[in-house]
Image 1 (cartoon, rainbow, N blue to C red):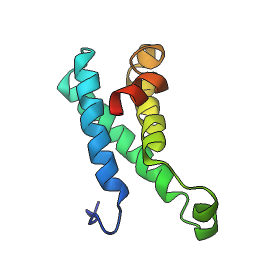
Image 2: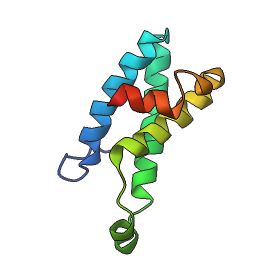
Image 3: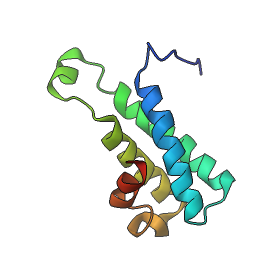
Length: 101
């Protein structure tokens, strides 16, 4: 994967900010560093896939993606994948949203 500059993908800055807060949230809830890294890596793939899927200019004009909402959805899916039992507790969308804000 080729690294993009911030100018090419401004959502990278948002992702880094949210990922740092998510890692703190996961660690606070007893998740190991390795597992937190896997969850963040998975959420990164989902996050950027969601953002790139709306490359159509008309679609972008009609539907502005809020980076925080996209991140929360992505992190929730990643947590659900790795720790299904957490989806109703610290892995819920409400808890993730609270942790990154």
